[in-house]
Length: 534
Image 1 (cartoon, rainbow, N blue to C red):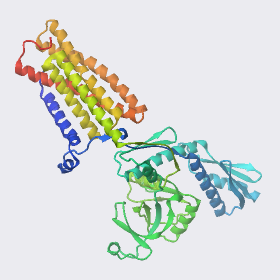
Image 2 (image 1 turned 45 degrees about the vertical axis):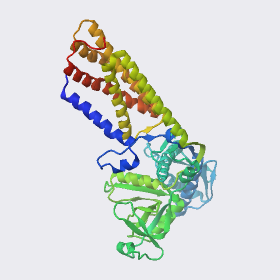
Image 3 (image 1 turned 180 degrees about the vertical axis):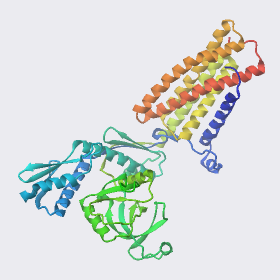
Image 4 (image 1 turned 90 degrees about the horizontal axis):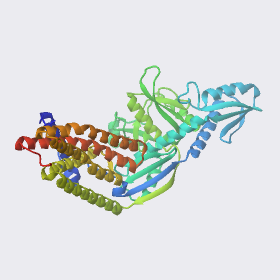
């Protein structure tokens, strides 16, 4: 164990270099970090809400409003389908969470039921051949259409996921660094925006509905002429994010707006196998989009999100069924990204603010100061104990390993852009407190071996070799506990668990490898007859 192999020396040196490079930006001012060469790391620790202040919001997705919106769309879908097939009906309305319609021609009842079972609703995920609505003959000439309970639960869950993506994009516009946006329970979302001290501003931003429109591309002038400022009346030049053009000239009048879009999913064209994006409108949107596409065959329309064109496909045929697909040079990933953008055009359901809190920057500064003082006090206490227990040489070497351990923790958290919270500081202090346990086990084993009459080199080898099992057992149980906290905990608990997990790994590395390399160098230089820890 005490053989000073090249890989051990290399690993020790590289770990110190790594720690210095990735931890260094944390002690440099912003101007100095920006002046660093491009190949140098520039990321610093992200301070959580409790350390730098900011806003905390607890939002609830209004699933009842979502269900009501779906019912309104279902009414329009029923109306559209019955009219297209010339089936006479009346008294189409919502009744107790379902849609009821009276078929005035009894001879058309079976045809109406079959039509609605085929065309109304969407396929139920995970159940082949099923749809998310049931269509039943309720008697007396009435048809009742109801949503399947599993479908509404899935819809509510998807609404929360979509809302999280939309909120993330909205909060990024504030310039907030590393916001925390996580689901809490079934239909709640926790939003933490470090550095944003005005919760009202935060609520205004995340409460807005992103503007999504479908507009015709104006090909009456060339892109060069449009870029030069020769823009026809009624048109506007918009920047593009589609990767094909820097911008598009589009008609100002929107064909369809995002409020009429009910769904968009990544799919594959059954004929070509190419990745596409399928989309679906509500009843009003389907009629408007069908008319617009029928009148503009062979022309392009632009999908505009937040004032930027995200796609500009060519209309190959009239899209009259309320759904269609966007094809192009998509990969599965890019098609999914586009589908996410389309779905993110508007919040799928209203968000209600259940709770809001503001953490002042001065409170965060106090927390950082207190955490720093606690860390320094803990480090000094460990330094004094180790030197008193094992002398300046062995105690000093363990403290050097401990300092490198702290350096590596900061470096890894900076590299991974982990958010440091107040519980995370507690995890850091705990890590430093228990990091020397491995050194204590190794040193005590050396003492026992020396008392048993073994030579210096044999005692040192036995100290590292025979203590390793105990060291590994102790740290494996700790990291398992940390992983459980990270998996099932939320917010501060995760911050504590993440810092503790990193600390366990780095403490074992430094306490064993760094200590071993330093002691081996000392032994090679001094060739001692006894160890100064007996």
